[in-house]
Image 1: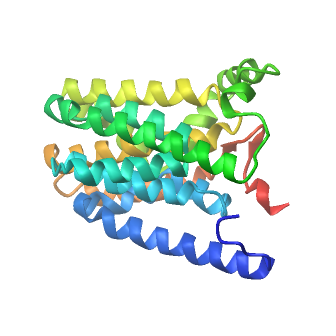
Image 2 (image 1 turned 90 degrees about the vertical axis):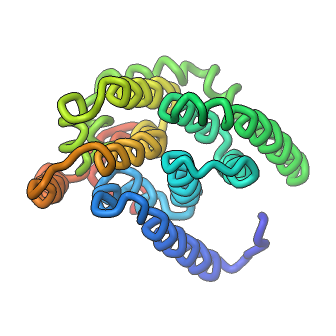
Length: 272
């Protein structure tokens, strides 16, 4: 509707170009993690972005990565952060709200005070922009909240998550699971507490979404970036980093991709 493309082949080409461009920009913006940057590519967001090509997920991850890079390096610019939070809000409003909560858990107290006004302004402007757009295109369907609180959606989602918790956790962490198993023994208590609280928040909001693993892998993105940043700054693995990379790759390919999207999947639901 925005681009006005009527030829489906042209549409697919545009979507492919946008997806590849976003992936390249994500890799470029991971440079702040230095030798830990490649580990981020082994986490669940990449499966989500590649399985759901044409969705806005890869754009969400790009924006989250840029925001994380600025916040975790204490490179705070009110206008810049507000702008990227606004983009995230109009890109996927529900994801944006939860990501903002996660950022407030992870960042330092001084940064919390600075980012709160940016979150408030970006969420209001983002919601207003979305409502204007929906009105402009004549959208008359049910809103997200009405959908979630009707037809036993929450109850079904909670049951899906509780019955498949291990699968959902694996789908979010994938190859980075190795590092998260070491968090409690390698990072400070304050960092460990923030990481686990943010994971619980991601799980909570995942429990009210039917596309379970897809949402969880996206909500986990800032936490994974935060953890890798802390490892880079606080932990010296000496010559063991190569073993961690090898373990991550081995886990990723030996166990394979397990994804919960209404049922347990090993391949994209869009391939059918």
